[in-house]
Image (cartoon, rainbow, N blue to C red):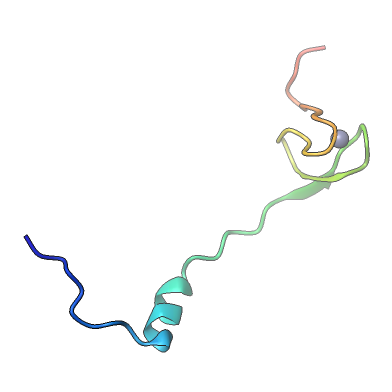
Length: 55
Ligand SMILES: [Zn+2]
């Protein structure tokens, strides 16, 4: 048993923990179909173009 927080963290302590939460930068590319910005090798969020799809 245990794990019940007895005190609130300060804002600075919360911010310090969250300092590690940022996502890594994605490889941004442009969809060859609709020219919408997309993450490379992922499905296009705009038109659904899939780079790995066969034919
Ligand atoms: Zn697209």
